[in-house]
Image (cartoon, rainbow, N blue to C red; front, side):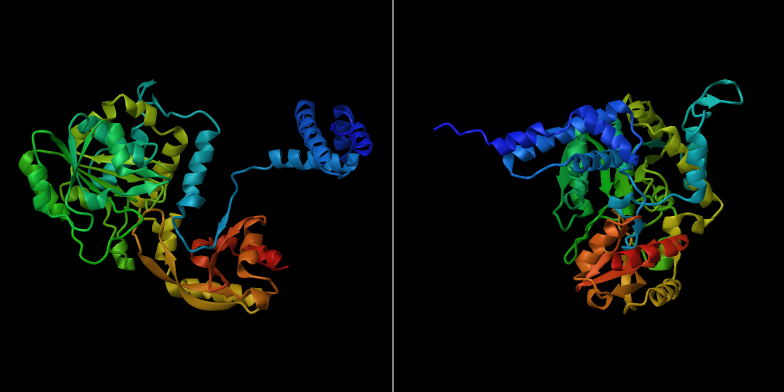
Length: 461
């Protein structure tokens, strides 16, 4: 039996405005200024949705309601997707939030460089084409005692090194170091794509220097040591020391490559973080090439850095893929400004370092002031901050947390309060534990304390 047309539904379809009528209605609201073509596109999209809704339900759609929908769609297009977030989670190098925030000098360097022309590849002294390496290279050599080059991230750095030094041969690596470095990227996959053959030695939890010695052959091109990134194996464990691997590499005239991951230029041992030796120490101990990130403990922009023996760095730079993986002018501007802070030992100008160097007492003082201003049963409790970002696995810093109980604040739950903070303006990320919201001011710039206080009050309201 053929279904009969629904007269009421047909009437609602006929009542839908034309595209031009809808555009005029949107313009009359005056909230969003958009070109005619864009307004027309969103109007057609909205009318198509309205037709589908009428055909599938009995709902009525008004001209004013349709205009409001178009207005909301245009406003969403006008609003940036990438937004500044207040990080109150206590994770200093938060990968999902962009890792290390840049120093004021680095931000200014990017603004100055991006807004006009620069001498990126132009030698002003001789008036001819130059190399972009010089802008960070001279500072890196001062800080590390070895030449260095820059690519777009650390995965690219280790890939490029292996493609040049180990392609067609074997790279020996401990099974316990075959880590996943984030977003599904794994060291074995990078090795395979570089053209190097992986030679695994030892066991997941324990590898000895003898395992490396027995694996060395005429096919060996490099020995690879890898930062353990975001995990830690505990219990019956072991790995060869750096000194043992340096001696083995020297004995067989094979380059020792170390992926240092987070790129520490500052001695963290004085803050109780002893698992992250500085990059310069690895080179001083005899590692031939190191690779590391620019946006982790170094506190600069996303970049991959390759440093070490001059002849090996020169070989890697000549590889055809170096150009495909190179960094742009904004990265060089930010990196150079960051490195200069290290050269002049202005540690607290680098936000990630400043957060690490904060004492528990300094954080507690701010937390108590914040809790006092907030009221609503907020209290200060002891806690821990995490370095995060693929560095110093499981190592933490003692901190003071502002603890907010949802019932005292009139909220249904800590998770609902957390959601309101995330959807606020500015968005705020905090931490949840035992149905309480925890705020760690270690990862909030002191200049943002008032903005955070306003955001929390708005969420509670």
